[in-house]
Image (cartoon, rainbow, N blue to C red; front, side):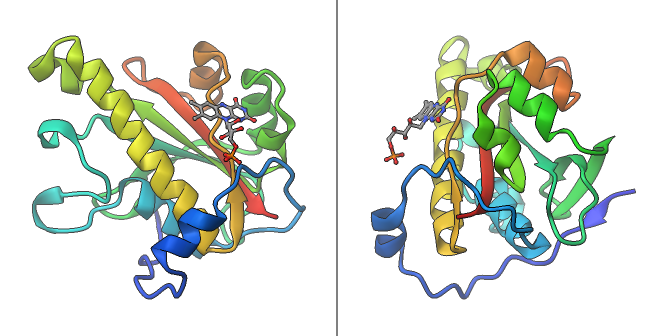
Length: 197
Ligand SMILES: Cc1cc2nc3c(=O)[nH]c(=O)nc-3n(C[C@H](O)[C@H](O)[C@H](O)COP(=O)(O)O)c2cc1C
């Protein structure tokens, strides 16, 4: 059963300049639980629908939208621990794995403690075929660039929420894929643990 997320808040008070100025990689998180509203906000910033025709919060070459977003929740108020796929059109979460998965995700990320320590992690994955069908090999570059857009949106949104994150690129693809039960045609590009600072 899908879990409906609260609508994104469009009235935050931090300016873009303040968020850019304050962004810093955070690797030590407190044990605090984060809210479902915060998770909702971050997912929306990463890949949410922001207008008619399915346009999104990040640019996409040819509007092909090759990215998929997963959330590994551990300490999120009102959200059972588990792995979820973000369904942007309904702004909802589709359960994929039940139960605590932060440990296995951290192991897949070469044991990086911040992955276990975050209240949740957002994983950005690409389905390269969606872009290479039109752009051939260049589609791989385009999808990877787009992951950078999504990651930066996450960074700035997290700062605006008063939380912290770090963009993690060091991990074993196959282990991350297994930990979150990704589909065969998805490639993980970034893990972004999120938590209170
Ligand atoms: C592509 C990429 C991969 C990264 N991978 C990791 C990682 O695996 N672990 C980590 O702790 N930080 C990782 N980082 C974060 C960088 O270490 C960090 O951004 C850099 O030290 C600059 O610090 P700042 O983000 O606080 O400005 C990565 C950053 C990028 C852009």
